[in-house]
Length: 322
Ligand code: CP
Image (spheres, rainbow, N blue to C red):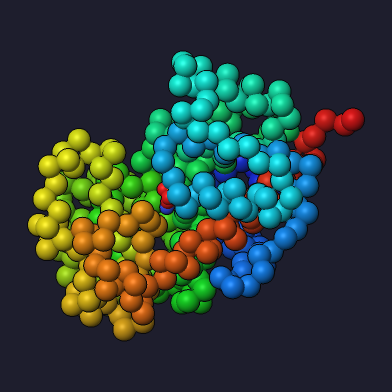
């Protein structure tokens, strides 16, 4: 894969967290903390993206990622274009690359892309002009880098360290890009123990998630955990999911208050959303005192601001002179 950084080490694209160093991830998290404002506080307003045009191209549904890229880029002064599948010419058979070239001709500088096709962000990164950047907002089951970063920021805020942490990810790991990117972030940042908890059919092969422990009983997987991250069943990627017995799944793998007592008393309960209440998590836990699910959403805006500001700073070095 072509490098995501330029020769000076500046972030040019963000397709995957693979290959990014601990220092690079830490710098993004540190920058995100300076942008973070809590609900009720005035949002950060800056000029880091003045003169930059950003296109949000979401060809899969999204609430959190799309809204936060939109808010993050506007709060830093960018022009923002939101295009979706139903209103774009891709629905008439135009290739993704032609859509990108069309918008490039309108001086778009940054493309934020969510797509179900594996390899699409990297393909586009290889074809855009030198002054243009591509950010993945979710690639098939493979990668969701800004989600991995916002999860890491949420954990760092509460636990203050990664070393020695026991992190359990529970649910449909096999089809989850969040599990892949969050695991990558936490491993790079030095998390102590990563546990994957799922029915056997939803655990990934041993070739992936190297170094992680695997469990097929939730009680074993969350025992003593400092972080429990629940995932939904990715129905859009699992043909058999239509026949899922949701009550049976909740009985065997759902996180309720009784099971949560097995984890550390200071456990953080996380979920990337969208949640299916009563399927993978009870409302009592999702809305309970150990839940940081809404903080994850808040951190999502700050992390996307940090990524966009880093990329915009690099782009200025690659722009054509007037
Ligand atoms: N976590 C996440 O990617 O949520 P959305 O699908 O709503 O963007």
